[in-house]
Image 1: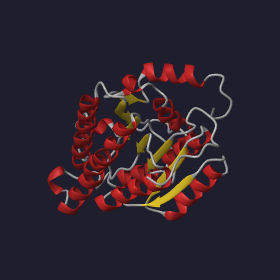
Image 2: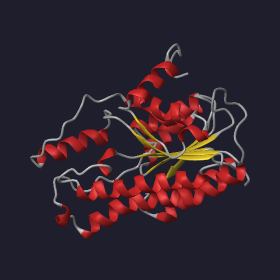
Image 3: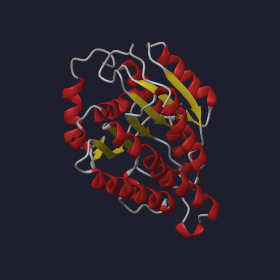
Image 4: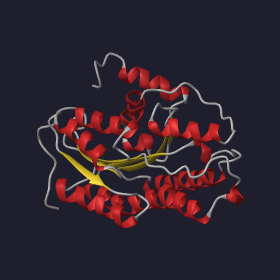
Length: 271
């Protein structure tokens, strides 16, 4: 462990290191910048270098350190590389946020999903979170602090015709994270699920276009700005480990909404 966090950050995350998967745009980028504004050093992971470089540049402008990492979560070696790079740079990992997902084909019966699409969804949506936990949980247990927030979806909790592959992969990762929470019970490391609401991102726009092109109709609510949705993750990251471990934190939960209103009321800007 050759690196260490900066001592220049100020805010509720000062002295902490966050590793954000899917941090190049949308909710992930908003989370990364929000964490930097809160004093955290960050590693930002995406498949597109230009995106993570831009986010890291904004973070560095907030006075913290930032590492730009290009990785495809479908490749376990690249996940290992992202964790190793973060440890080399900072020497610790206090928070992981994973927002990466592969929706696969939409409006397709489960038996019509190709083997390649099926493998890709399982690799990104299930195997990647498992690999992240396998690599990061021991680090967090050794340093006696850590939280893992896995963004997922209620599609794993219900049956939606035409989304069998995606739903199966989400059901698997939902169970995986709840399993992690049960095994981490009593430690000061937490793993939880976060269900974001409908957010105005390029991914959502593509998702909608693909659904409409296939002639399907899903009820979509009005989309929330990524910065507002990122507040859900930032709030969750500041909760005590025992309050979120094994929990499902959903944007549309009235209790969560009430807690968010109380927490963010009176806070100018991000903090």
